Amino acid sequence: MKVFISADMEGITGIADPSDVVKGEADYPAGREAMVADVNAAVEGALSGGAEAVLVNDSHSSMTNLPHKSLHESARLIRGGTKPWSMMQGLSEDHDVAFFVGYHAKAGTPEAVLNHTYYGQVLLSLRVNGTEVGELGWNAGLAASIGVPVGLVTGDDATEAEALDRLEDVETAVVKDAVDRFTANCLPPERARARIRDGAERAVRRASDFAQPTPDEPVTIEADWAATNQAASAAGIPSVERVAGRTTRIEADSYVAAFEASVAMLHGGGAGRNEFYG
Image (cartoon, rainbow, N blue to C red):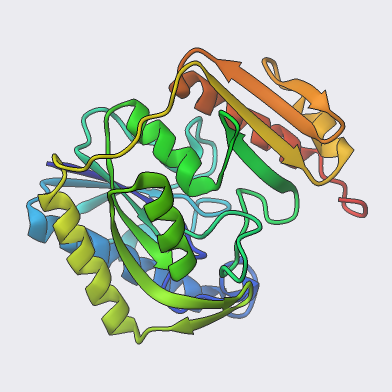
């Protein structure tokens, strides 16, 4: 039994404000400790459920947030930001189930804590085959396409709603209730992590039973950018087509190929951001 964990930060226990998740800000060290605790709770639950191997991919921002020495001794860690599969680096067909720990709702979700899709100030919308998705749906499509179910999603209550809508059959652990984009009503840490451990254990025990939708192929992924310069930069990537002033698109026969191309498209668009005009 092998478990893959994609660990983001905005949906971690106790986190509500940008200062909690941005390196160099006053509250980032505490946010980092909270991230470690949530991830370790998921690892503990997975092991209790029968997992024999757990691989954690640091999936937030620079992807260098989880200190290796602080991670559970039974888990391996992928750390660093140059990843062809980005938040899903390390996932393979050999994994029996995937966990999304510390995830957040997609851009534009009313009141959802720190809601955004990949880039907080640059990307307005991401669509797969015409349906708007957040990081959760985008990444889950990759997992489904290679036969790995998403067994657990942790985050705020808005993220839970998105997970249930997108995946239909998944364990969730709500660690806080959304009040506004920068405000959360947070559970006590031990209660939150107990929910994560319990959800992880159930997810491993149910790994072969999840019934989740798989993406249709061929695949089209479109990005709506905040500004034209970002779309122009994204369109500089081979296989990316600019279909409107602020919209770029990739098309591929398989979800894996489309996902890999969309990672490049997103990085290309993000690199086109201007310091003063966005």
